[in-house]
Amino acid sequence: MNRTLPRLCLSMLCAAGVAGCASPAREAAFRHEEVAVYEARQQAAVRCEPGVDCEAAWALTKVFVRTRSASRIVRADDAVIETALPHSFGFVYLAASKGPTDDGHTLIRLKAMCRGMYDTDGNAGLLYSTCAHSIVAIEAEFHAWMAATR
Image (cartoon, rainbow, N blue to C red; front, side, top):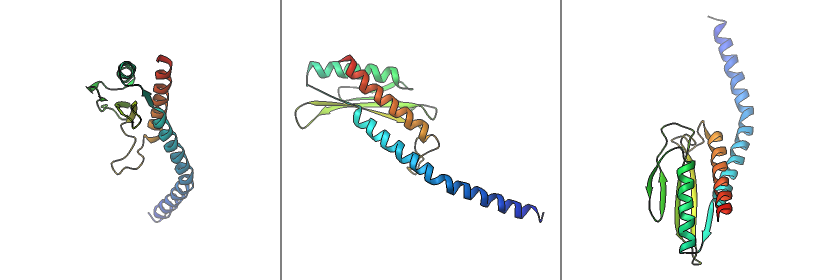
């Protein structure tokens, strides 16, 4: 038993040392992913002219949400499309909104979310990196898909 305690202490110190070394790299990766998610969110928007142009874009948005979300649509009206929270962690679910801009156009925004991305305290969750990559991919896909279909 006398040998077990020093070994335990030594292993805990080594683990703390390794974790300390990994923290700056993990923090840098987190910041990089946060910037990528922010930029993808900015790009996941479509401006359209009120009327037929926007109604067609909104219909395409609904198709995109229905076919790309891990869960079903639970609300869809003239201003919002929302899907349910998935049962499993790490899956993307979507919401879209449509509203007027200050210059008389209409803006359609897609927001991808991922269950398990953040802990209850608001910090990065265990699935943060996986979720961030999924969100960036689906929001970039929305931007490209809307540009190609319009």
